[in-house]
Length: 82
Image (tube, helix red, strand yellow):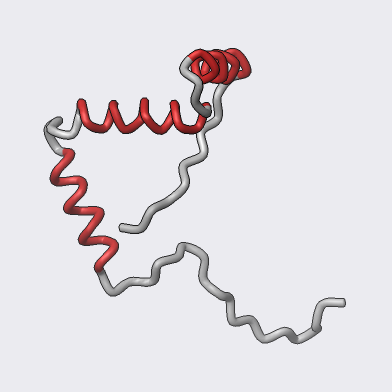
């Protein structure tokens, strides 16, 4: 799997709290949020089903299937759009 960016929406209050905690710890809010997520992932890595889900994701990524959900439409226009 490749590295991907994760965008998370927070309420204004939660965002402000994250910014304040990051300020107190003299780090960036994005770094603090990443550390929190990585800590959570480590805590629950052995939860039942996680290893199977990871194997299923890897198998899906390796499968010889189109990697996108949107496919090009081949439409023969009888009256071209203007």
